Image 1 (cartoon, rainbow, N blue to C red):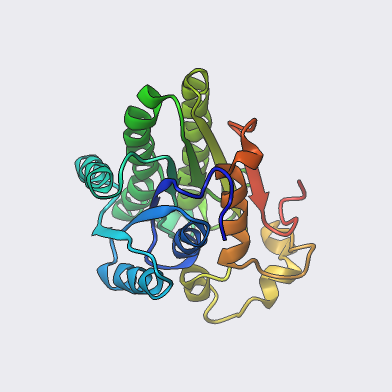
Image 2 (cartoon, rainbow, N blue to C red):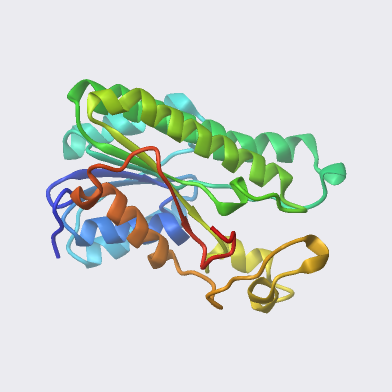
Length: 259
């Protein structure tokens, strides 16, 4: 299935070893994009590459820690050498930590910020250096609704995602005069390995119902999202259907943030 603005393009997707990143890579490839996928998890990344190959695609897959800006630049160079000039960038790599601020270890804080904020910066800068001079292309950052609504026990994660969102919108303002669009997709609770690990003891029922004691609203649509739900939102924003949309944040959370 082809889609205008995606068919024939070259896409870079980080965080592609599982969950949302994998779903985005598969979705874009199915619509005609040649994809370069990256993740710090080589086993999951290889599984994603195998899934793409099974569907007739030939991805470039590289182990990349997005918190290492030099490695990110190398990956973009490798992608362009192998697949051609990059048109679409999806920054989906993420790290999660939960717990009270008083118990948050320094190394946990630094790692979450390194992946979710510095990683988005590194990917965004690499994209800007290539897309800007060409005067075309688009970037989507996968952030979180936690970046816009306070969450007890998620301060490090929420702070890092708020930074990622603000950075992406600012980058979008810089690149708009050059014809490059930058947008944000902010999922809520999504059925990924990360969420399953976080809710291993409780299941998803408390997420749907909400928790007044933690000042947390439930999910009005009554379901946890899927990676494919988020991938569909990303697909829209990178397609020509969204050609007049930039610096936008699209919530994909079943109404959980009441916006």
